[in-house]
Amino acid sequence: MQPPPPFDVPALERELREGPRGLRFAPQLEASFLAEHADEIVGRRLALIVASMVLVGIAPLLNAFVLHPPEAFAAPALRAQFGVMIPSLLLAGLVTWSRRLRRWQDPVSAVVAFVVTCGLLFQRHVGAQLGFAVPIELVSVVLLGTAVLASLRIAYFLPLVVAIVVAFGVSEVRTFGATPSVANAIVAMVMMGVLSAIGSYMEERGARHTWLQRKLLEQLATHDALTGMANARAFNEVWPRLLATAQRDGKPLLLAVLDIDYFKNYNDHYGHPAGDHCLRRVARCLAAHTRRATDIQARIGGEEFALVWYDVGAAQAPAVLEDLRSDVEALKIANAAAPGGGAVTISVGAVIVRPDDPDDPAGLLEHADRQLYAAKKQGRNRVSLRTA
Image 1 (cartoon, helix red, strand yellow):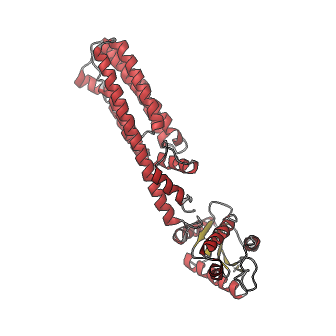
Image 2 (cartoon, one colour):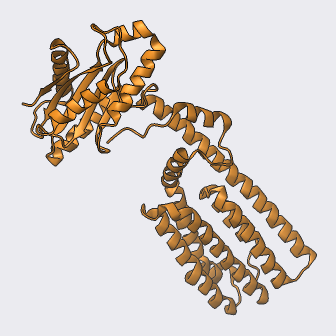
Image 3 (cartoon, one colour):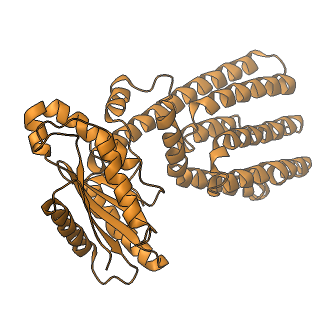
């Protein structure tokens, strides 16, 4: 229910400026990229797998009506096509389609591409013994399809290229002998492998750069750059959805709006850099009080914050809010600009939202604002809670 997880904006900008070193981000960024990239390429990989299965599946029809290979070629070709290649492609399709198995799709895809290549090399070997030529270009098709359409990451594609080139070289020498034409074919395959690896590298580098740009824009659009919390725009999008979820589940919500007491005085007295530091410390304290992924923390104004707790009702709310208020005061951030001096404090206005509450999200927020005004009118550094 929260907006996308916050990333450090300077870190994103640094990665964009310097580029991913060795095609790898910092750990948090890397984990997020791998998970999202795996989901983004599902459609392309499934399309490639289906197309490959169709091409392998119609091979017997092409042999029967177009190519007319020797009769002795049919049985071993069918074993390779339907006993090895198509089952391997089905496995790749299952791993790619299943969300639980998707994290294994890169290594599985690399292995399946190698198995399909070996099936082609086997047919080429059998065909040569019977005087029937299986085109060498089919191996190149596997390399190009895996690099371009499957977007296999270079960490898996490079070992695949080496394995395919070695298997091709060994198969060609065993089938046709160490002749100049075989040497030329191996050199051509090496060149194809190098070009495919370069294409795979550029594809992944471009995907990483695009992902970084999207993350930076997403971060700037949904998170407050100073505190890392969700911003007002994100809160206004997420809060109605959480309210609808709680109403559907029959759970109460605790909605709180708060601001830092005498913060304008603080800024005028200590300066804006100190004010920014104060906001960050208070924001970290507030964020530590949320308990689950469905809770919301957002900075919705200069010194104003909104927090929502899922499944917190009237019985727990007073203690939750008082702990929040007292923990901010316990930070002991000196505020000599406040009347009487002392530490930085907060005023909190809150409402309990029951599943059958008739108010809409904006109306509930207005109720919380009114409670905040009441807390300030009562002298600040206190909680005003509407329970009914």
